[in-house]
Image (cartoon, rainbow, N blue to C red; front, side, top):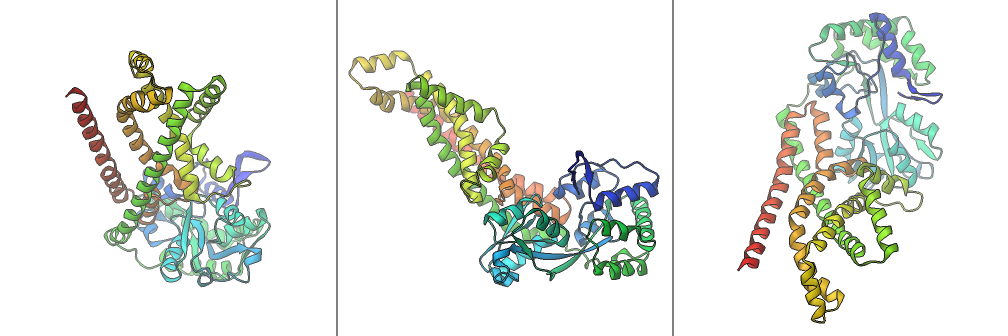
Length: 456
């Protein structure tokens, strides 16, 4: 499913035509709703749409969470590499110690996680199916594991890639709806079976050049298993939520460490740059002040998410920063603008009488800043600086768009795999609180200590 090149307001694709076929059989007019791929199950449960389909994989966890149709397409998980590496990287075993990209919350992601334990592969999770292949061309990853439909489409968009024909696993696409809406699900099942019998589904798949010989046997199995969708190609019963929670919790802790490390380093960069910017705006000449003011207004006036995209993807033609480095730089540059305003206000809050007295006593300007103005300004800035650090800790969740698997991204993958946000969300919130509350407590202690030292 993608925007129509001739009219971006319209969607085209085989899933679009299947949805239109279902709507026509139901006597309805289709209206397409945009939902994040990782949130499809939860949106179905909420009732945000009647039916959902867009490469939605058939998994035991999904069937336990929502009402899923009979599988209407069988796909293969295939490995895509750069053309120059086609002989070197033919399997996951060949990619020992390498980075392999995929979509989060998919069968392919689970395969890569297991391969990471066996072959030392690093699974790199993306939120879309475009950037994994562009990053493969740029050399940021060494391979992409996704279904053959996405791989074939990427091959047409990106010359220089090669997809191995052999599938590492097989899976199926399904239509989903709310768990209680089994009547609609049953209607969809009958429509899909009729479309398989009379060739309409095959016609759509051939039109979009994704018909394979696998579909013939798959459709036969679906029709033979009428009344038993599980026999048409689904996996065994889902693992219990408790077991999955126990299995995922260590990875949540690791992701929390990544979040904390990234936040600390980004804040250190922001403080350093913020001090330089604030000092330049207070002591610099007209050109320096104008340039620094323009930087602050530009950064504060544009979304941090846009800035992260520019640093990681926009600058890729000039410098190919690793994801963590780009995230660190993007957050640091963004928060430096806000920190500079805090420090500038703090510097200007120091009584002018003290500054004039120090100059009369013969202090040079840099001595006034270092010995008189700076220490007092730091005390004024401490409280808002601490608040900014807590805000940065939470804003670090945005770097998941750059494939950094921090706490929120890991939680999103966890929630997608179990089909619920309740337990993952509660654990994520608890970990964020465990990281942020001590910071606030430390800041209050430091303020109280300095306040006592100035009054004594």
